[in-house]
Image (cartoon, rainbow, N blue to C red; front, top):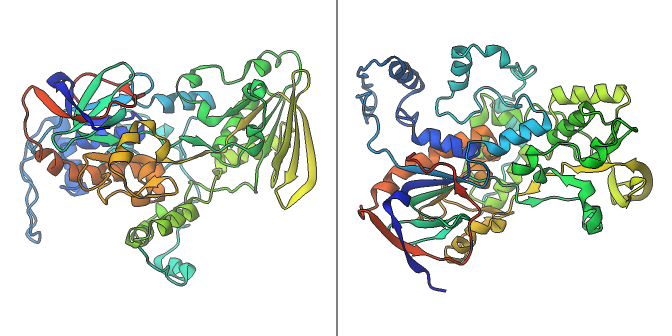
Length: 500
């Protein structure tokens, strides 16, 4: 089907449209609105400009003699363009809707991230904010970190031999001047550039027994991907447990070995569930972060350089998986789990998988566990379970993103384990004005792409490319015409109709 020409009036045409309103989108928006980006100024100059901007002082900076290109001197005009930005999101018209809902649902009070993991372009912005607002007591020290990182020599010895190197529906595109996005509300939005910043939790990884569970009993199993958006506003406990807590002892099973599973266990016990079983395929790994310290410590550039110098995307994917090592629990929640075990409220069943599951309206779930496929006969029964939570994660697969279907068909690129092979600037290809940030950019950012620091790093890369892309567009007056393909509908709606 040949794409048709669509006319979009100026009020619906933006320089940049960001799809998603989560942490990566917020980091991108903050970077685009930052008048003194770190790509132009040093950290010291950036902090000085922030102070001057706050207090309304205008001065000029001195250039360094040893630099071939002098730094921009006028603090009052640091940027040559100010793009008009719109943000689209599938949830409520506010930033971080899913995050806030999940934090409330899981009872999360702190992220397991250092203070410099945030979306602001200034790496010390969070610490400065906490000091300015008198909230420094909310910053919790992460003990056992400093001094635990491996030096370059230690990492070299560990590596051994070097790896061999080898080789919204947001769908309208045009040669010039932009892209078209169709929302579920029927609105057509035009953009010179689109930045896809939605999450990656598209394909829930469900245990095998769930696929054989009858449809009428599926309501008694919850995957964490179902606890987002509007669902998070509902009561954390399902009706069967919430109505029975005051009448009889209740029990629940949580499947998974990561931090989310520990948070669900803790929340269930706080909510009054008498007994919780935590079923883990392997032993619980205790880590401060969901990747090794060598990716965030003072030696992190060694890891990142090795990652970026690797040209084979499958080798990069292996490095990502090795760095993340599956799910892990930080020391704070691990100590909570041990306390619950001592109190008799929790039983951790390590090295177990669910082999069979049967539901009865009278007795609840009856589960048969075994020690993996290698020991199918080592059964352990768990009976009288009221509900099952699956904290088993999701597999990133950009082919399941409906709003990118036409883009994938008309502008095919390479993929590796569900992740797109982008340009170094995180552009879809060298021509299409579409950028991808967040977890889907992991092949180019590294293991930290799924975290707050990765969002900031991706925003910096895209921002450095955007100015040249936007300056390449011609002004088409009040009406912009470009091609689009109206075959699919977008599930994203505007977060804010005002200018960015």
